[in-house]
Length: 270
Image (cartoon, rainbow, N blue to C red; front, top):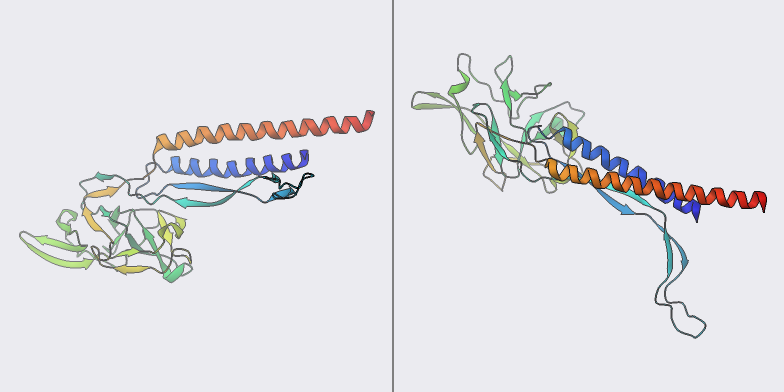
């Protein structure tokens, strides 16, 4: 059984290492706009059955319990926390936050599903063609594309709650584009690809793209950004608990190794 203990402790150390990686990534992105924290889900492995419950004993009675020895744990998956992050005022006219469950739609390489990706980060900027793009290292273009005419300053751009993008001329407004939002049956099943982006997967279900305020997609709030929903206090508590669990598994591994050493010495000197 010492070998089983070694295997079980080893699976625990492996799973806890994955948990440490996820916690570290959450903490690293505590200031990333629109970031959604992840958590690790664990599940136990198969059990070694040494006696089934319900067997008759020598008196003809049924044993109320069986005898099972577990062989460890593993990570069953990581799960996104899709709770909305706090809204932060920026006073920047190209910043937009979503109050609701929708995602902004941006253009990516054709290697991804439909060449589209989805984000909660609303920090936009203008590229060389005066198109609205994500203000990240790749400058992903919004879908549908929105082009701001030359000579129009950023402070003259107005984004309404239903995603209508306008430019103002005094008291007059001219529509230049329309923001659209995407929703999914299971947004926790989206695939993260970095750059504050997610792509559609079989688990997420098909994307539903449409106007804000429809079908629970949410409303647009200009001059605000959605901050990361990472709670540093919770993450630090999880980090401490994971560290303690790692130490306990290390002790179990060490104890099993010492037992095997004792058994080997008995065979050698017995």
